[in-house]
Length: 183
Length: 163
Image 1: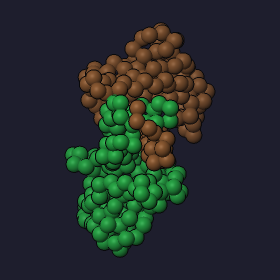
Image 2: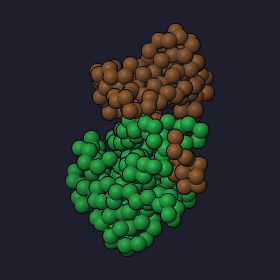
Image 3: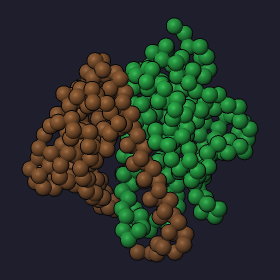
Image 4: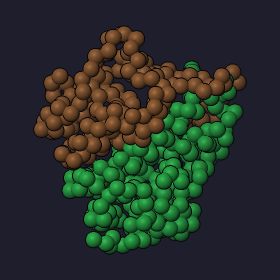
């Protein structure tokens, strides 16, 4: 069997590693494809979110915090995704995601995941293992930043968080943006 | 161990009784005396035997593995229903933290090999199990994000001053 839309199939990248072509096709059947213009907001921090967005072309910009405390995280490009936390556990979004350059994205909703899980358990296992591995690795890398909460503050080493903005950016980048270049 | 005990654990809440029964047969049940290391940081992966744990009774102290004197070790106490050991279970690699029984502990664990057998014999249960584990990881990441964002807010409003 061939993948019905090889370009979209390729966008799913490492999410489909270990999946049969039939399961990739079934996954493509439950996602929605959107053409988005630069500047559009697809996820707003604090608002309820329930979908993951996988980039086929173009790029997305992820920001956290408000106004002067806003932090820009690395752009998310083709083959990468955002929103997997809300996909797995719908709730308030941790970041705002805007379209950085005109993009084609695949939306994979929590309901679609549930449907895929019910109808294609083997394919769902491959997908969930890829997502869970990524999340586990990111939590682990973050723990290596050795954060400690003391009196409501987070510190790395002896330095208060407010004085290490670049470190915060790295840390949030690790937590919020899927790992890049992982084979 | 009974399926009622498994059903009481938040992580397995929502699984059907038939799945809980199959899970009960797949999980290993163990007890640990006070002070026993359930996981030792730095221990290399043996893939087949890599396992994650769910605490049924007692408390477990998790402490991060520091590699330089500038790093602050983080210690956290886990309670009934908490999960640990997922990083190595999912990704292989050396164990990343020490996990030590704080008092008498009972726990269930799932070895990688048993999971892979389950994937072949009962993919529906395997996918349900992976889903609840992935959702738990997502909640952990969200909680971590929330803590960091709160700290940024605190820092911006003068909540954090030079130590």
